Amino acid sequence: MNINEYRWINQNEPEIKENQLLLIDADIIYNRAAFSVENKWDFGGDPLHTTEDADVIALFNNLLHGITQALNSTRFILFWTLDKNFRYDIYPMYKANRDSVRRPTCSSTVKKSLQHRYPSVAVNGLEADDLMGLYSGDNSIIVSDDKD
Image (cartoon, rainbow, N blue to C red; front, side, top):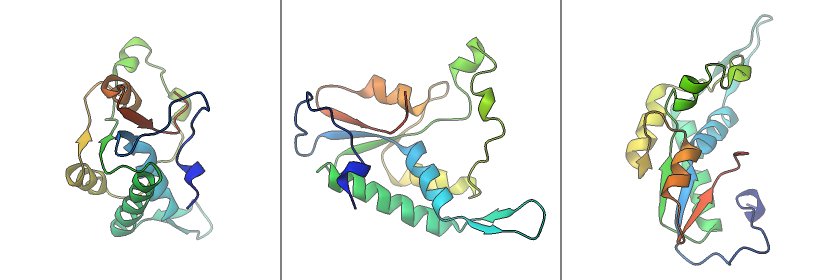
């Protein structure tokens, strides 16, 4: 595993200290894991995508372990986005360009089991990146490849 896959650090930023609190965008890891283990079945029409929940959980666990190893920390909180956030109240077309984007095919119980297994935060009305910003401080590292 290449450490550069999991972190981008500006040369002007302070060095990462051992065991800092990692604020991790779990949505990204979850989607990456779920899409990576999908099986695609094409019978000539629209393809059928299937996923084994156990495979998603196993890959999620491996990706999370890789992040904590790469950043030399055992302390982390996973941040999750719920269905809607306040931006839809302000601008109903928020993310309308993503309406046709396919979501992973695994069951909703996978995400719930991961949220119960690990320290997690999800708040109605806020996205994971909003929450990470609110929780961030001098002794934390935000772990995300979200453009925001």
